Image (cartoon, rainbow, N blue to C red; front, side):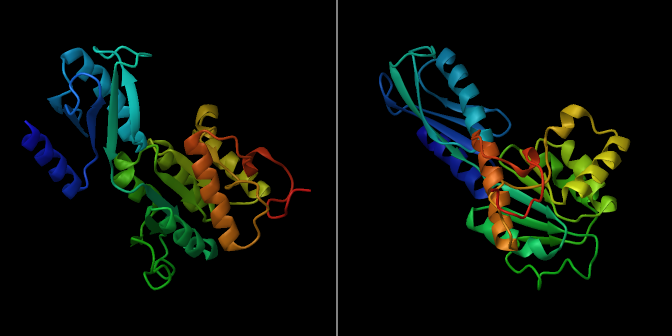
Length: 265
């Protein structure tokens, strides 16, 4: 059984497929293992079907979030009991960041995102701007309309991933945003002044974006840290992504008013 589990785990990691491994580290059955694959199939056992069912459910949530940690259960998966300590390891590919718009801020955002471990795609329909030479640190540079790219990669996006729209142009912004809203991506940030945001909001309303969907759009993009340079703005964007993912109450530019590139007084 152990070799079979390890084979499944090794194969998934090699293929870049998300997979989770749960191991009993304290309590009855210490050393027992359960593997959960991305399609929901499990292999192995932690001791009994009830425990496997509860832990597999928790493994699914941890895998989606890319988290690793220890959880405690009763002998049959009971919550708020300490009989068993089970270590859940998530093996997931790097989170994705899709940046739409080959603009001045894009290079800085690519660099900061790579430091944080993102697989970064830069996309712009204008071939003269979307080049490997301009964005050598990007993993992928696409010359494509944003909605077409999102139609292809959208199903792979989850809560760990981010879409950043930096184009300032409704003919690119609106398709990018509406397509991103159809995915499960965890972060949708859109650059632009408050005036640009108001104009864009009208266009998005016309495109059928609902009040509930607007809550997912972080615009103006970034945390309110007084960013001025492209590099500071990139840090501001990534700070907002981290805060949103971890549930921290970082003050976003979306919630403020006034100029967005001046420090708060």
